[in-house]
Image 1: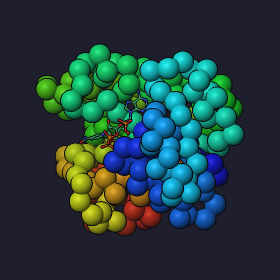
Image 2 (image 1 turned 180 degrees about the vertical axis):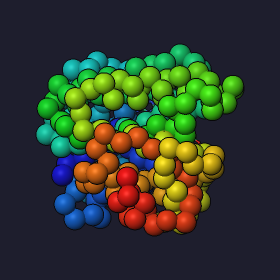
Image 3 (image 1 turned 90 degrees about the vertical axis):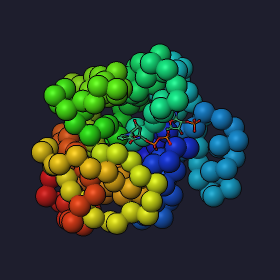
Length: 214
Ligand SMILES: NC(=O)c1ccc[n+]([C@@H]2O[C@H](COP(=O)([O-])OP(=O)(O)OC[C@H]3O[C@@H](n4cnc5c(N)ncnc54)[C@H](OP(=O)(O)O)[C@@H]3O)[C@@H](O)[C@H]2O)c1
């Protein structure tokens, strides 16, 4: 399965690309926006494609062509303004959904955010970001794609435990970016996760087992 990772140069995206490279049956394609990022993936024997989420849907269709799946792990980050929250986290994500459909790709995995589906639980300071994630997820759910929406808790840059808690009503918590990348890898081929959306935080269950129960 050829998987285009949108946001491949990011902290989750980079780990996912490398896990996909090591996994039988998968070939990652790193979608990046700078030549030097593509060069760095090439040094590791990873194919990449240049495209920007602020560009056209047609350019994204071109970037996705030949892939079997798309994983969206891009984000505007905490140091940009609300304009980028709209342009990347909402419209950028929505454009990739549209592009995946136009490119004839059926599988799509979205990195969303903890409780993005539930306004009652949005942190006031991050409310605009949650609005963007909420509606990007809705666009994906309304599409004809075989989607899975993964909503991680607070992201940590530490080694993963390989153990998680997955569900709709899990207590707020955090999770290592490495574990999020492993969850994304696990759900990609898991048909039981098609049409599913769930929160995920650090927990007691192995990723394989937790995903198999979805
Ligand atoms: N922070 C949290 O606690 C938290 C919690 C839940 C969910 N999330 C979500 O988790 C996901 C990944 O997180 P992360 O920590 O891996 O993010 P990250 O390290 O900030 O990576 C985000 C990536 O998005 C790319 N990007 C930004 N604008 C782009 C554009 N216009 N076109 C193409 N790519 C663009 C960046 O590219 P460059 O490398 O070129 O800058 C970067 O590689 C995001 O969707 C985020 O919203 C975060």
